Length: 92
Length: 126
Picture 1 (cartoon, chains in turn purple, blue):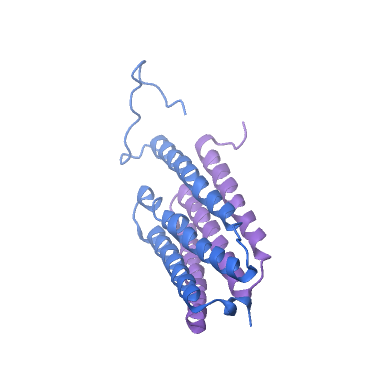
Picture 2 (spheres, one colour):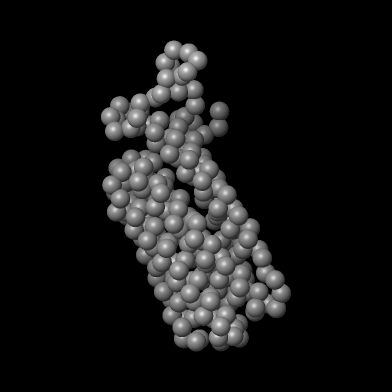
């Protein structure tokens, strides 16, 4: 059963890293700016989940704060970029 | 030797299933982000990762840390609430920005600005 848990952890890490790579491809080829912002938001969420899985695998609780900061930073940056796309400036 | 190996087998099974479920859903969402044709289709794809992808992985983390530390560990709920409450806000905002940009570019595939019921047709106020 321990082997199963390790396989699940490794599969989760590979799948999340692959998801981040697919979002990076969309960010590079994305035809418009809004596609790139959407891909950035997906990268933020995927990286946050990858941090949590890595913390679980390493057995350290110290990566949790990093995941929290990434979650909040993803929200703020996506809202700021969407506001920029809508109005042309972030704070008016 | 990590603290995870002190988990009982039934909890290991639950944690493994939740991890595989969450990461596979996130991968499918990222695949949809790459694969779908228009932006208004693609905006739905990463929500797989932010809804059940994040929920399953955070639930697995909560369960295993609660067992390892022998108390209820619930700080993952902060991340969960943060992600699940903010994703609809950001994506609605981004969709509105994309609609505004497509209209101002004259893209014929998006619906035109609906007329205001109380006044003459004008530019969108928002």
